[in-house]
Image (tube, one colour):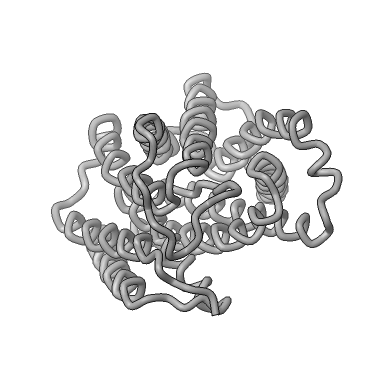
Length: 308
């Protein structure tokens, strides 16, 4: 599921997309491969879904926060109230993103959930339009294609079971919160470094998910050793090596190319699920996935939008 946090110095809308350095191609390939493991790992883990979402963010925060306190202590101490509120809002939206996406994998297939959560790009475009950004025709055409793909995915899953349709709805809500998180993060990263922002965001998401787990009686321990290994792998591969690598290459690679690269997580996650979990997607799902990914790619490459 792609939700990378950008850093300072990202190119503005309409900027020229230049060829990234050769090492960035290798880093992107590694980031995509690591992030693609998230949906299959979540689907294979028997621990409660919300607990998995908590541990993923909580363990990630435990790694990032000490580094931020060491390297960005002065920046975090001088953070204005407005900046802090925006960062906490982004963390709240991130908690919602994981809080819906992770449970979706309990009901629908890895292929459907991974594709539908990519609708976060569509939601981000729509939220940006509500905030006054003018979207080009290409973005609206991509939105229409992606919507057609969503309708086809849910139609295929509805023909399979109502349970799969519920999973699709949860994945779509995960995409909605993910899109709002991207827009909020875009505001925060103008004011904070990636290190400080990530520390606040991950910590806020972990705290909120912990509250939800405690309120709903989710077991936070007592899992078999295999589940803890999967949770640790999810944190290291998807959270730290996947998203962190995407953040790293943003220093010299266009966000457009990074976003396009993350779309490859959908087919890779589906292939891993087929090989490791025996989840073979029905043939009717393939055109739907193609439409959704094509529409999302159109939106991402609409780099000529301008602010009102």
